[in-house]
Length: 566
Image 1 (tube, helix red, strand yellow):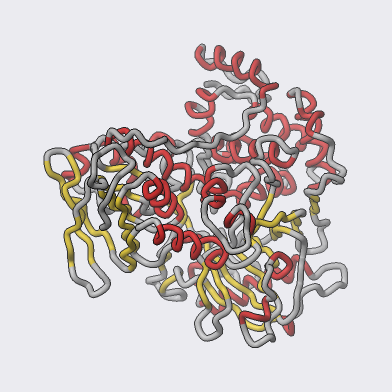
Image 2 (cartoon, rainbow, N blue to C red):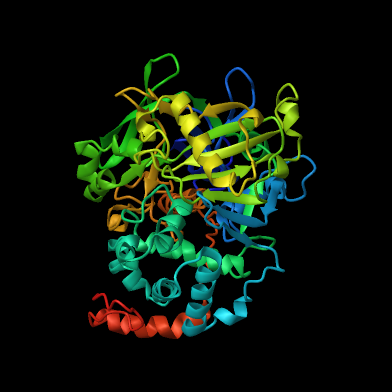
């Protein structure tokens, strides 16, 4: 590790930090630390960028990914980092590589009407000014649900009321009550129509997390829904932010590679292919970490501070009796859940922009979503191959347990060929309707499944990069960035943050929290990392204060049509 004058207030030797994990959380922490003069080494098991990276498809070099990336306007932490990562020709670094998506398509199968929503200012949806009271918010959500998603009017009103109940709930009720209730139970979705469930329940959840509404925390889904609605109407966005943004090229080219270059220039060192196997304690602190290097040799690494930016399932494996004795609260990490949410690339011989944004295949049992990438990319897609590939329909499969629409098998049970064939068939069943063929087999050049799915089609099938999900009650088990061990700090989208849902923004925010805690522990005089906050509608402040009093008394929310007790 490099040494030299430190801005950390610790003297001439820069304090050494071992960052365990090189995904978005690890790279975010490394940048904040390196800019403050710390000597940083990042240890990454597989590849820098983690689940956010892009990688070439074997045999073709075509860009692939774990799943498409998008950057809502309410992101403030990650996008601040992006502005500090130089990119040739860009005034605002990699942030200038973002481009707005202007539409959403909820595509339906079997001839059912699609749901199309424009994000343009000229959209027919009412202006945000009309959402400033609970009654008007309820009316607007109910009207949009009935008109856009064809939800029966009485059920649309019920769903709207429930959304407003969450929006006017105090923070104590959100964490103490709604976090412990599934989104499905909160909505009483089981007693509603399929149209209601597709729109308010699973249709919403599948776009936000790899979960079923029966397994999703109401607090997590409600919070991100509130942020999304505010963003749509221009509230809570960062300067220049719009509801839905994507990169104008592969994530590796447009974000991860420049990020690593910036860190290298700041003196950060990388050990890629090194796996952390255990943490060793001494006098209540982390004395060293045992790692296995690329040659398979075990090494002991030391540092002044250890910042774990590993996924929850890998960090949990490090919780030895000695570690838990030093911080028993970390045992909750083992109760946190993960699900599968992985990408499948369909490379097409022609450009097929299904919509200028994301598509949700509403009736897809595998919870398939997609985006047509060529329309957003700066570099012609043909440049990545032999000029026969013009587009990539980048898809994500979020339900790996439900029977397929055609082969009746769960994705977990299928071979790669079966996964690709079934997903392609499900997509065609949605977009080819009314006698019009939007996608034909002759358009398909090839496909590429996320290599994180190992042993597909065998009993040993596994997912090397599962996704943390916010199941009911999980907030209590999620740790803070500062642990009970003086020199151990946690970053990752599974750590408690104000955004709460599994996102790159959450990973970045947790990294900032971890660095601030490390600075405190180190006695540093360096500036603390700024932390962006989600927008809180001020018009609901009085309603939240009234609800706080009711919650303290054990009373239900005043507006809740179901009267769920606190």
